[in-house]
Length: 401
Ligand SMILES: *Cc1c(COP(=O)(O)O)cnc(C)c1O
Image 1 (cartoon, protein in one colour):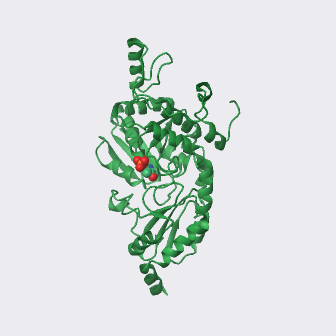
Image 2 (image 1 turned 30 degrees about the vertical axis):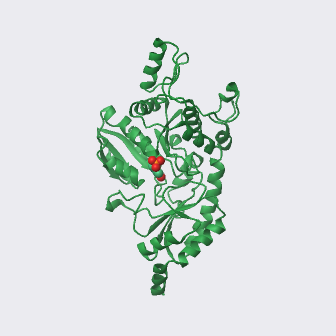
């Protein structure tokens, strides 16, 4: 196809170019763990090509599923197109993807330092500070990236909108400050529907595909969109360390991509209505949602095509009120994770951000909402009911009067 296609069309058609020649319409699921070798020579050459991060040679073999799988490769091709990238590499989870990114840009290249912009997803913050991967991490604010770079810095990590308080970082400004050090943007909250970090100069756009890309709460996966050269380094880590995405997961993710633009728009529309409702509620001390401050620096305008479907809020009545609300909702499931068709509510300080050191951990009165595809009026009614059922909130409001 020659015309430049809209994202909605790409989401339905990308990564399917070989289906016609296979004589099928729906995505095939290739489950072979091993694959026939034409002869020792070409088998060995194929192994060598893929173990070092390349693709299977045309006259060779895929050899072994830790090196290559066609179902996974089709999903990777589709995600790369949506992210305006040359390639993408899929992993067993978002954390396996982040681990591969760090390994490929850290010790493997003689670099032992990473600059990480906070806030970050709790697991990422924890991984970077864990000492498990042989790197040292400097955590900083977006304006401090340039002053945090050292001669041995191999990677800059930034997440925007960030988990859980939806902080927005200026991707192009972070890239400029990084001064040639590759920047990975965790694009999980925005998805390629709302933001394409590679267009803004980032080297990599990383997703916990577990969230919006899968969209149905039934696959754990991660994926990194990047240049073909970076993809080779990441595939090498994947082949050697084995953090693979199973083809059944890749199938579900590729299928999920077809509805991603529609889901994002519908979930975002409900989220905006719920934000407007929350702002006026006396039980809520503060609402966190991109653009509520009016975008004074024009960052949203420059880098996003929408504000997404994640909301955070500070409850009056502190931890007790937050705890009561999570137990009282009925449509909102009290559970970690996000980005699915059903709405979730959770307490970041106790759960997703538990491993984060206290000084960087979200406050105890913060709750995070992931808005799904339910009717927004029903979700608002559920929150109203839960607020009314929280005794700590009632006490606080009475005392305030
Ligand atoms: C969930 C999440 C991750 C980790 O992904 P997993 O698939 O759970 O390993 C990373 N970044 C963000 C922003 C997330 O929400």
